[in-house]
Image (cartoon, rainbow, N blue to C red; front, side):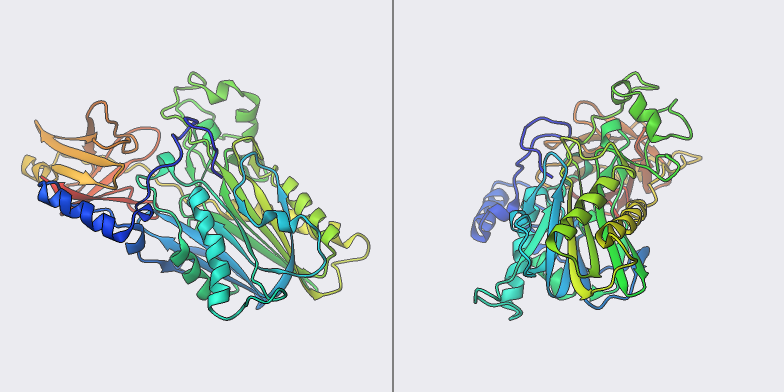
Length: 477
């Protein structure tokens, strides 16, 4: 979701992207900078990024359903990504929109209730509105690859939605583009769905309303009852907190003094106090309030358009159990429902669509929980301060993108960091230097509510090494 107003939560919209410049203009600008003695631009342009497709996941959902193929693509430099759901033939689709700021492509077509199956693929993407390029790219790939043509009854149809994964969570504005989406489509595979920070969920977060700022991702669940198959998938980038079936908040960076066994009712019941400084401790940062869940329910049961629409509404409504609050003005929640119409029999007698919706609703809670990865932890401080000569080796100016740079200095046996670009480098601000506390000779940390680790590797610094890392290259000592 991309909220169209300025100055809400995580900053202004509409940052600059290198993909908006022609290659010759980038080269000319670089030559002018070099002639003037300026440091070369080290951030890779959008068209120089290397897609990572179907990377091995720490945990994956495995299921047997040849009709449904899934491809995930990521740009590590973001990190950001895209998830493509490709069906073996054209299928029937429906949509339910609950959030106040959705970002979708071709959603109106699904609202018309036509009985003819027309849908080829559903696409989830990071990159806010820029990521919608991923949806149209999947469509053109179907045409370019000869799977679809230009005749009126063979035109490709992909639908999709995006999450907002810019702002305070990363130091660049790389977005999933045409190349990434098409690579994910062309390598889509049946029966495997990576869970956690992969694909479109690579830089997802949850709990921003309360300042939890927990890392999130994508999750899925599957169940077969007789011949009927039901699968659900979601990318959880929610303003609210993820809640388990006991009401406990699953992931959050709490303030000091918050309840140890934190429950959603603690936060919801204390609103608006729990949203403000002074409720069991001061809030460390402003919440990033641009959020979304984008979800998909797929069944092989043949359903009429009206039945499929009810399943979409039923399952989407159920998600308010696992995410609290849900579907706010600042969320862009969208759910797609698909019937592949492979079987006629339902799970039981009676209201077949209601039964499928009930099963899918419980599966969706499983998927929401499966989306939550292990959270980064603050490293233990070193027993001794590194030698001053070691500290001096880390000094220099490090550039993450055209938006963010970090100046590191060694003074009086301490290592200091100062953000020097347009935006802060997480807890390292532009106003005054912050001491980087030693963990080892090469690893340092900034204490605070949100873990911040810096690892120095020759001429680069890696912030929060791992799935959400940001890499800065030294431009001068």
